[in-house]
Image 1 (tube, rainbow, N blue to C red):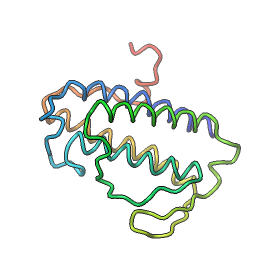
Image 2: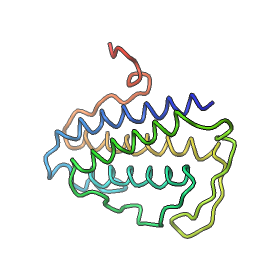
Image 3: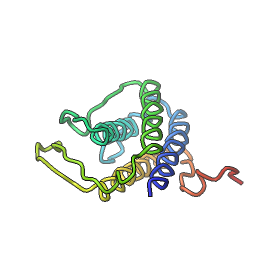
Image 4: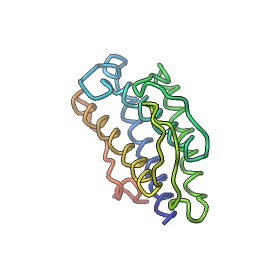
Amino acid sequence: MSGLWAQYATYNRLANETLYAACAGLSGAEYRRDLGAFFGSVHGTLNHLLLGDTIWMTRFEGSTHPSTNLGAILFEKFDALRLAREQMDRRIVHFFSNLPDGFEKQTVRYINNSGIDSSDPLSVILPHFFNHQTHHRAQVHTLLSQLGHAPPVLDLHRVLRPDPA
């Protein structure tokens, strides 16, 4: 089963690279334009996605992450956010490529952002982790369309295909 999580981690990295390449073509005004998405703009959504990944990875690695506003802006500049995203994606790939046997059968205990002491099975949280990434990439995909830019293909089977023909 852990091979599946490593595959999702690789897909996540490649999909983020593809999405960030598309977002790099936005003007500063387009990048920050509030189009009514849950986190407002491409800028807000990409920051939220990195924050969510940071929180969950910290928990997966056995540490705690301080409660924060889920709409917090971690990086004001696109280039800094992109670099942090690349570092996070390498961290995710490394972690999920080296899972100990039975990891996904454990539970994770944490204090959520509402201050509630929680304990959830990783069999639920791991799919959530990767679905959360896909969900917010899809929002950015839609925002790119709304801004008049062609959104990239992010289908898993197309992103992971060695020859994208």
